[in-house]
Amino acid sequence: MEDKKTVMRTLSSNIRNKTFEEVELGYNDLEAKKEASRCLNCKNPRCVKGCPVGIMIPKFIEAIRNNNLKKAYEIISESSNLPAICGRVCPQEKQCEKMCIKGLKGDAIAIGSLERYVADYANEHELGLKSKIKENGKKIAIIGSGPSGLSCAYTLRKEGFSVTIYEVLHKLGGVLTYGIPEFRLPKKIVQHEVEKLSKMGVNIVTDTLVGNTISIKELEKDYDYIFIGTGAGLPKFMGIEGEDANEVFSANEILTRVNLMESYKNDSTTPIKKGKICYVIGGGNVAMDAVRTVKRLGMEAHLMYRRDEKSLPARKMEITHAKEEGVIFHFLENPTKIIKDNDNHVIGMETVDMKVLDEGEDGKKKIVPIDNSKNIVKCDMIIMALGTNPNKSVLNNSNIKVDDKGLIMTEDSVTNRKKVYAGGDAVTGAATVILAMEAGKKAAFKIIDSEKCKNK
Image 1 (cartoon, rainbow, N blue to C red):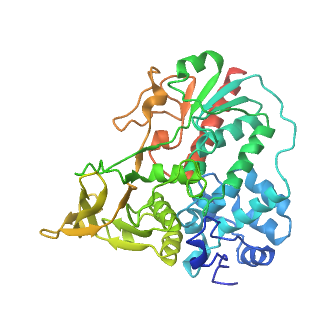
Image 2 (cartoon, helix red, strand yellow):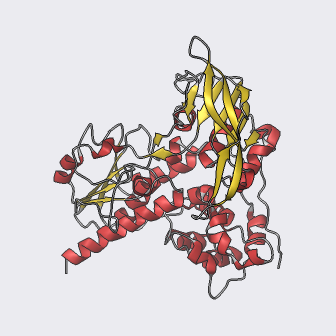
C-alpha cells in the first residue's frame, strides 16, 4: 500500500495568481483509481465518524476501485446533497481525513479529492435524482439559499414537501456564490446544484428581503413550516481610529463584489478601485480568500495576523496556495490605527508587535502587545476579515428569541415559534459549509418526523 497520497494537479502559481480559474484541477481516472486503491476498507471505519453528514466513505471508495462511479455517487448522495461543493471546500483534514487510520503512519486517504472526482463525473454525465416525487401536500418556506438552506430544500423536496426558497440576492447559493472565490469553487458548480433543485420542482423567489419585503409572521399564514438559514453575513471591524477611511473594506464586501458582481472584469458596472498595496487583517479562510483575490486583482497583497503562523485557523492547503501565489505574510503584528490623509484616503497603518504568553486556565495561549513596538506600515487599501455576526433584520417583528450575540436560539432545530426551524451560521455563528449542510439536513429530518407524528 502507498503511504503517500496522490497529489492533485494544480495550475502553475505564476499563472493562477493572475486569473480566477480554478486552482486545483481534480483527479483523472488513473489518479482516482490509484488513490482509491490505498483505502484499507476498514471494518470499523473511523472516517465515517469524522464526517458530519455520515457518508459511507469506504463503500464509495470501493465503488471507485470497481469502476462503478454511478454506484459511488449514489452512496455519497444518500448522505450528502452537495458533494461537488463539499469535495472542494470542506476541511476534510480536520474531519474525515483526520480520523483515517492511514494517517497514523503516512498520508490519510484523500477523501475530499475522491468525493469531488465522483461528483464531477456525476455532473458531467447528468446522474442524479430522476425518480418521481410523491407529493405530501405540505408546504415549507426556506429563508436563505446558502448551504443550510439548500441542504434542507433537497432533503424535504425528496420527501414530497412543496418547497419555496426566499433569497435576498438575485442569485442563489449564499456564501457559496458571494463568499467563496471562483478559483476555489467555480460558480458553474453552484449553478448546477440550483438547477437540480429547479428540476425537482423547488420554487425560487429572489430579490426578497424577509423581515422587510415580507415578514416571518406573514409566511406562517401560507406555509406549514419555515426554515431560517440566513447565515452570518454582518462583518466585524476593529473599532480603531481611522477605520472610516474610504479604502477600508470588509472582506464580505470585496468578495461579494468580485464573486457575485464580477467586479474584476474590465467591463464591470461596479468596478473596484484598486490600490497598489493592500493589507488583509485576519487569519481564517475568509482572510485567505480575500488576500488571494486582491493578488489576482494586481495588487501587492499582504496578510497580517496577530498570532503566530502555527495558530492560523485557515486550511493549510489555502495557506500553501497563498504563499505560492506571492502573498506576503506578517505574523504577531496587529493594527492600532488607520492613517489617512485630509481627503479620508488610506495612506498607511500604525501597528504593534505581539507576543505569545503561556496558556491560561482555559487552555488558550494569550497574546499581548509588546510595549513601545509601534510600527508604521505603508498601504492604500485595507480589508478586515475578522469574522461575522448574523443579520437580525430577517427576524423583524417575529418574536423569535436570540442570544446576546444575536444568534437564533433553538432546541433540536426548533425556535420558540413551533412552526419555525433554524440552522447553520444563523444559529451557531460562522462555521464551515459542511456543518451548515448538516444543520439544514437535521432540521429537515425534524420536520419530517413531526409530520410522521401527526399522521399516527
